[in-house]
Image (tube, rainbow, N blue to C red; front, side, top):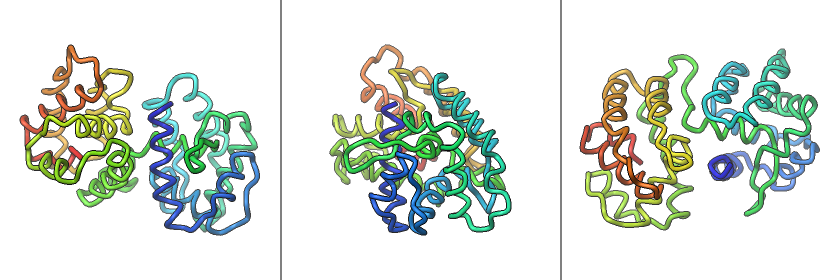
Length: 272
């Protein structure tokens, strides 16, 4: 659950300042008390919007179910899929996305109140619960536009900025080292290595000491612009064994990213 907790914190830190939701209103939701407060409703919409599980006035239940299958542990995925299916129509007839997010979240609690204990929001440095956080945290790298299924380079950059804001302070890597990495200079710097591991961990492609090349290929197919899909897929396949024999996840991430850059510098936009 570490990846989920970390990503939940990233998302909260992104959405809360944008909409001005209070800590009290967010934390109360972990106990099933939903504030009829516009900023709180829009906070939920922001969280769901990052995953595009709520997009253009529609709840993408099928996307939630697919993400649960792809990214969540078996003991959790079944509960998420059950809630997504039960609440598929909870937002029908509601034109406002903030109100829709509120209705969907309340529905989830009504159908499976016990699930909230397994899904995280972050209160300061402490964990609190809400089903919606885990649903969207699994999807941070699955923020595809429902119209085309692809991200633009601008959208990729925005996603990276959210991740960087979390992983850079956590690992202490400097801007200079990161900027040099984008140009192909990989410093033998522990902080950099662990930064790369943090980024890969949030997307779940590096998990429990294993590089999930199959998931990386699937994400490339689902998200990247057409002119990058084949190149990214080829890089992932070429570097699928780059970390073989390594047990430290920071070293693994470093080896994979160096291999990726050497294989095709043109996909460097996907590095950081």
